[in-house]
Figure 1 (cartoon, rainbow, N blue to C red):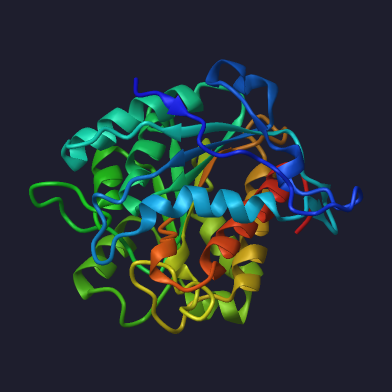
Figure 2 (cartoon, rainbow, N blue to C red; figure 1 turned 180 degrees about the vertical axis):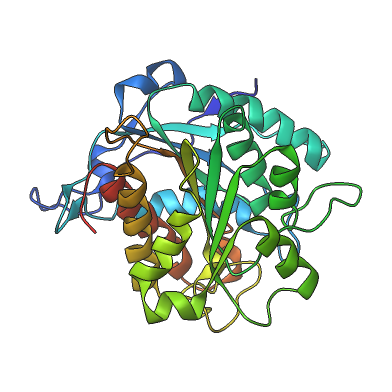
Length: 319
C-alpha cells in the first residue's frame, strides 16, 4: 500500500474567535485513527491521465486552502465538525496510469475500511476508479456530477475519459450522471450510458433541482451504497474556469450545492428492506480542479464549498 503524507497545515484565516472555519477544526490524523472521525480527507495529487490540459495535480492543495478559510456553519444543519485530514496519497512516479490506479486503490481500500466517510480531493477523473473500485464487492452505485460521460473504451492505458467504462466493466451496479451538457458528448457514449444508467441534463437541474436529484436517486434504489463524484467541469465556465475543459451552459454553484445536499440527505434517509433508515453514503470526491488554468481561485473555492455542503447534509442536515 502506498503511504499518506501530510503536506498541508490547517489554520483559519480569521482572527475573530466567533468565526469558526474549517481551518480551525480539521485535524491532521493517521489512517489508524480515522475511526475517531465522521469524515476524513484524502488528497490525490495526480493528473497523469488527463485528456486535455493538465494542472489538476495541484487541486488538493488549492481546495484545502479554500476550505480552510470557509466557515463551518450551515444555516439549516448547523456547524460541520468531526473532520480529519489523512494527508496526500504518495502517488508512484514513472508508472503507467493502470499501475497508478492499482497503487492508489490499495490506499483507498484501507480508507474505505474505516468507519469514517472518505472525502477524496483530486486530481484528474481517472482517480474515480481507485476511489470506487474497493466498494464493488458489494452493491454500489455512483451519482456523478459531470458535464461528460467519461465512458470511453480503454485504448492502451486508462485516461480521465475512461473511468465509468472501467467501473461498469468491473461490476458497477447503478449509475446516474447529473449535469450532462448538450453538444459535449458523442452519440455513442450517450447511448452507452443510457443503456446502463440515468442521464440528467444541466437544463433539468436548472428547471427543478429536486426532481433532477430524485431521478438520480431513483436509479440508486436497489444498491446498498452510493458514491458521489463531482467533476468541477459540471459547473459553468464562468463559475469554474480552472478545469481541463471549461465550457458554457453548466450548473451554477448554487444549483450544484443544493443538488449535493439533496443527494447526501436523500441517500442517508433511504429505507432498508428491513424497514429502518440506513446511511448509504459510501464516499465523496471532488476532481479536476486545476489551479494553473485560471487567474484567481474561483474553481478551488467552488470545490471547497461543495465539500462543505456535502458534509453538512451527509451528517444529517436538511434539504
